[in-house]
Amino acid sequence: MFLYKFIFNTVLGWKLHGDFSPHIKKSIVIVVPHTSWHDFFIGVLTRGISGTLINWVGKKELFTWPFGYYFRYMGGAALDRTSGQNKVDAIAQIFNDNKEFRMAMAPEGTRKKVDTWKTGYYYIAQKANAPIITVAFDYEHKEVRIGKPYYITNDLEKDTEVLRSFFKGVKGKKPENS
Image 1 (cartoon, rainbow, N blue to C red):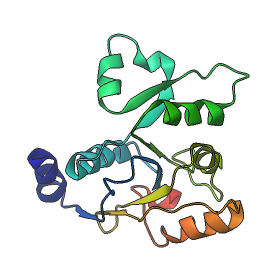
Image 2 (tube, helix red, strand yellow):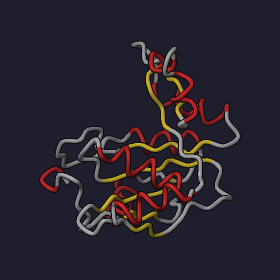
Image 3 (cartoon, rainbow, N blue to C red):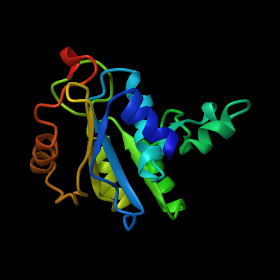
């Protein structure tokens, strides 16, 4: 943890606000804005500082030799992405199969500028009966903000509005894509 903090705070000059509740073992962690591959490193450092296992889902082909062990160590879970499968159901099953699973994802679905979020994160939260935790990567202020767990109301429009409000004014690494 010391090395993560040293790199994050001292070398890069970032700050972390908020934390993940140790009592919440399953959640969808939406990270916004996702504008650069640098977000991966900020996420790894944030995870290391928080001491909280944050997971992610990737295509099953990533989890073979030689990198499979490393990706699983980094919180990865394999997903069979062959056509004809319901990805939401498959990811909800991963939640059911694990005692602890906090899945990080970018609701924009890309590093490019978008006006609307994809809705998969929402339906996964619904099927997995898991709260959504907002995480903002604000490159302008060099801070990561972790929000409180949000339990969806099954009103997609209203819930999306509430969740998006957490990210008002946040600038990504590439602000033109925020």
